[in-house]
Amino acid sequence: MTTTTKSPIDALVHHLQETALLSTSNNLLDWDQETQMPAGGLEWRARQQALIARMVHERLSSMERGDLIAAVESDKAAMADAQIAALVREARRDHVKATKLPASLVEEMAKTSSIAKHEWAEARAASDFKRFSPWLVKLVALLRVQADCYGFAAGGERWDALADLYEPGCTAKQVAEVFDPLRPRLQKLIGEIGAASRKPADGFNDYFVGIDKQEILSKFVAESIGFDFNRGRLDRSTHPFCGGTHCNDVRMTTRYNERCINDALGSTMHESGHGIYEQGLDFSRIGTPLGEAVSLGIHESQSRLWENQVGRSRAFWSWLGPRMLGIVEGDAARFSPDDLYSAANVVEPGFIRVEADEATYNLHVMVRFEIERAVIGGSLEVAGIPTVWNKLYKEMLGLDVPDDRRGCLQDIHWSMGAMGYFPTYTLGSLYASQFFESACEQMPGLVDGFARGEFGGLKKWLNTNIHAHGRRYSPSELAQRVTGKPLSAEPLMRHLEGKLRPLYGI
Image 1: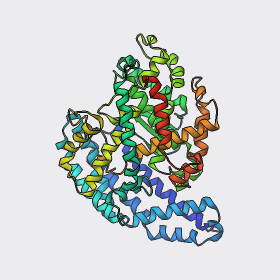
Image 2: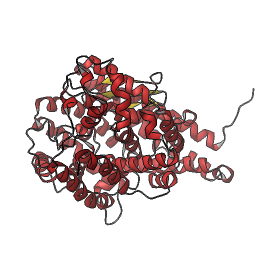
Image 3: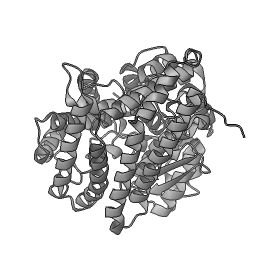
Image 4: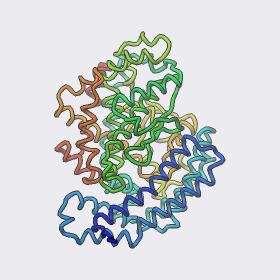
């Protein structure tokens, strides 16, 4: 009988993949809770997820994991391979972060957030922030402890420690340096659009389409742009999201509004962008950092790109318009492709982030950043969130928020304990615009192809340049590598102004 001793890198990969088997099972429980689970299953589900979270944390922070990483780090031949070196670097990062958290905190956070998501959904339905408030108080207290455990650089703040979970190296100061000059440019453009005498046709935004028909159309669009339904699915939930266990089992959800099919199409395109990224990861590296998305900012760039650069383009609607007639009922034929394009690009400040147009969307994100930064920092208590929310919506978007459901209860993120996440949406918009400019430069005629339903070239370009690398490069390194330039707001503003100024005649 012979035994085979694993090489240091093989032993580490085995440990990483076994840990991923556990952690991704929690992803599946999340999906089930949002789409299938009866309310009576909540308490047991919270205990399930808390136990799995503790088990995953114990493996992440274990001495065994540290020893396995160290063994590869000392293997000069292995570390000479750039991909192995990147895998080990990221595994070390994850291990160090895990060692800073006590298992009891991880378990309590998982249990509390599992219940809080349900309480948020109930409070949102009732438009009653006070119902959700006690759970958010608990989560914020846990998040403050978590941030203190992680620590942050001198001159930084607690929020930085949480943001680093979603966008490595991201700080509140850096976000403010992006947001502060971008905000007045967006507000100026929105103001000019509001004062414009020319208004694009928007009749399709109030056209009735039954939910069953919308579901058929949503799946058709998702599949057409490249989402593989043999390796994924699309369901309904209160808040659209994309999850799953690995690149061959991707679970997306969307939501439907009978009076505005563009809501469902936009969210489906958005989540399909996430799904295409997940399906584009390398299955041979599953469970390791090289088989994972680099950051939430890059992930959001993929969703925002398909939703906006593709899904709001004239060429896209030239393709979808005629095909849509065979699916939706009524007299939709009265809407020309230009009408559909115009309706998809109406700019009008509204209350709901996920329904926002491209120009106002990032102002929604900025409101959330200001609030969660203050809450985690301790200058704003949970009870004061609705008041500050409403004040900021008035200042940034000129709106009087009518109720909690259309105000501070509209997003699921805080009930998940995901503070530090929201700025990745705007970072994603910036990355998306920059990536898309580069794709168009490298593939002349790319956008024209959308009118013929040719989306495969863009998908392949994204697979090759972004998805296939996993976490090999940092977000900033990846942007520089793909576009040859550091991240900038200019491509986003060129995209917005180049489309909206002609549409509104300004």
